[in-house]
Image (tube, rainbow over all chains, first blue to last red; front, top):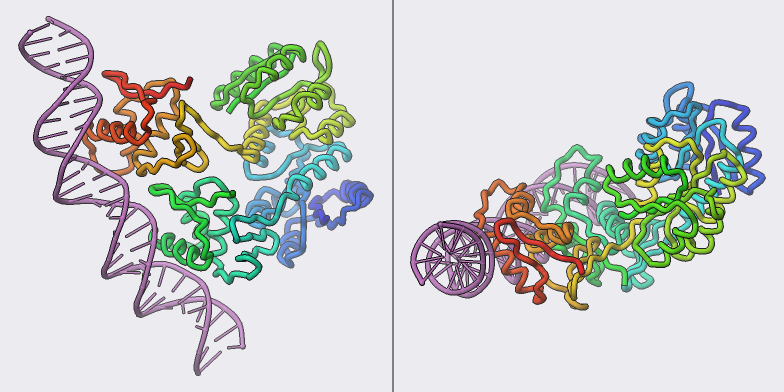
Amino acid sequence: MHILLVEDNITIIKGLSYALEMNNYEVDSKINIKDTIAYLESNPLIDLIVLDVTLPDGNGFDLFSNYIKKRNIPTIFLTAKDSEEMIVKGLNMGAEDYLTKPFSTKELLARINKILLRNQRVQLLKVKDITFDLDKMLVLKGSATLSLTPIELKILHLLFSNLNRVVRRTTILDKIWEWTGNDVDDHTVTVYLKRLREKLGTDIIVTVKGLGYRIDAE
Amino acid sequence: MHILLVEDNITIIKGLSYALEMNNYEVDSKINIKDTIAYLESNPLIDLIVLDVTLPDGNGFDLFSNYIKKRNIPTIFLTAKDSEEMIVKGLNMGAEDYLTKPFSTKELLARINKILLRNQRVQLLKVKDITFDLDKMLVLKGSATLSLTPIELKILHLLFSNLNRVVRRTTILDKIWEWTGNDVDDHTVTVYLKRLREKLGTDIIVTVKGLGYRIDAE
DNA sequence: ATGTAACGTAACTTATTTGTAACATACACC
DNA sequence: GGTGTATGTTACAAATAAGTTACGTTACAT
């Protein structure tokens, strides 16, 4: 497992690196935002980030929301001050955990283990003859790979991430097309669903009229 | 969502109960192990437990491993002392989180929200032979799926979300037709209720003359 | 440069859903 | 018991959401 440490205090880095390596983690560390962004953009495989909020060239919150959240890497925030507001903000932003300095190394280790165990969930979702491989972001029909377009894949991913739960059309619109400035027509969703169903062959996508769509796990 | 508070300090119970209730949680509290076991054995629906480790008649760790873990209820431990060993022990036992007193109420709330979001379990509301699956937005009569139209579904959802409480006709009008610009006739509500009752077969919808409608949980 | 794939829109189709109107019944109050 | 209001019932034409197909445009790879 690879852990990235972002922290400007060299003493802390040294101590943590040692402790983590003793526990068989591979550790990389960066001491500012700039280096971290450069590092992240080289697309390394990272399983968890320990991120100090106060850094010399910016703050960890922004780094998190701009670069980390979309990649869905579990993150533990660290702060020097015990500030209630920051803790709440960090957790609500989507951090997995939040610790304040001085913290116990053993506690941090326990929390890291916990998070990594939790996230080691099933990465293969199977419904009827369709298998969604979350690691490889691949969809199989039987043993054959389906060739889905990026948007089709995203929509199916969204549906598979919400098995047994309705995903609203508006949610699909928001989540799939949020980044583009384009306002996309509501009908577009319909068309993509049609295309998906066509490629999937098996009809595993249930329409919930007036709301959206759903895939049921058996 | 139901939260159980196990804590012998009445002041903390009062403060937390208030804060949690303000956030639309239903809160029960127990002040010792004995009462908690009795309560748990009556099998109430509990979504999360906040558990003080030091209690007058025993310790929370034992309670957790003997009664809570097997039921798989997410648990947050609390302790007075900031003892590294206890935190690590608690987390490794399978607790979802661990806070030390004095803690910030807002932080606890944020952590509770986080856990409950993560663990979202299936929510089924059952009245007589009708089951409302809030996740799937699916209504079953016995084991057969009822096919409801969007508006019928919304109205039934509203009624099921207010079990044992009267939902006013005006509330229905407002909530169901707010988004459409259309002013809809009051009679329309009546017609939909008729249609719902017809499809449900079982008469679980009670008319409260002059006010509206109600579904009673048994 | 060229061909292919992906994208979003538009136009069309369908079955269903919807709201209203018209009439029937229940209930409360005088 | 009569009267008026609130709710129940039925039937129907209009409206709509979703399914479908086709096409021009853009992006991309070869």
